Image (cartoon, rainbow, N blue to C red; front, side):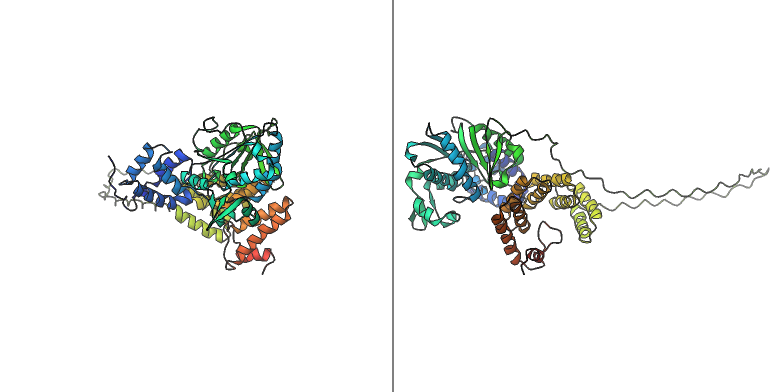
Length: 516
């Protein structure tokens, strides 16, 4: 029996968002909460209305009873996924594909004239079509080759747009105009890809969170190259781990896996071999795998010391005992006076209620502003006792630990934040600082890029990236990152404090960069 077409009552979805977040994560792997929670609540309201669900429970039951490939899930996935991509995205990775990885694969497959490639989470198709263009440039006898170029996504509507192969100017913002003119034809306000290149790509629905690959049915076995870029950042850690394992099994011997620079994590993709190509990195499935990563204890929330207790009151000083005197009673003792009732003992006053986490955090922040970090840390820890998921307190403790050189503690706090909110740019930045301090510039670079992907206005992350590029011997890249930081700093009032720093302002950045 169809549900009556009655919109959900206002505000009720907000109260039940956590249930929907858990269901979405279980079905799709997408972490739709955290800083995206308000967007999720709006999406749920709209999707419930379109599904004619009278209330949140009815909409939840519809989702729970429907397969993830059904129209009701298709509508929700369209709302909560981010389709942000463009041609030749990340020039450094494209150069590695053009100059190193694809030529190596072509040489290896020259006898069979067969290449098997997969773009996972392809969104609206710019990435697989970029691969098609690269292959056309590298293979003068392309028509003699069998190219299996699979492109999949969980968003069916994005796949429909991809199959049309029509794009507006924004999709070409990193593509040379002459290249666009060579491979696309103008159609009013859009550009359409040439039919011979469109035919190279096969689009299909695939949910990376489900165990449908590698398999013959999904054509995800024995692949020479997998691109899975800019998708892991939206997924919880346990889903990322399972996806990474399945992607490795999809690769043929000597196959390659490329993830986004901000998503690279060496231990996660072991035993694949990380290979650097100047300014980009990819993973190679070789007969000599990378050495096993060191076994480390899993990261856990920071150990919070108990709230400081006042010292016990000192016992009263012992007085010397008075000399004992033997009193001889008289034969006729005087009766004692009548006993008076003792006055009632007043009840001790009730202890004042413990201050809430927000109050403790505010007091701690005030102490920090007074340059009293040790006292501030105690209050930050107390606030976490009341609310262990309080992200500002965790971030403050992570910064204090990093400033004091307690890198393990800083990393634990940052990882705890990312467990609660994978899209927290400042936690990614702070984790980058820890990696850089430990001398792991590759991991630091990945963290800084991830922070900037989430927040392109993050001035300190631009500066940190400039330092990494300088250390890698890439002065031009360093100069570009530094120029971006200065440009952003000039756009702010001079005394604006910068996120991710203690007491650093926009004016300080301009002075450091020699700009007035």
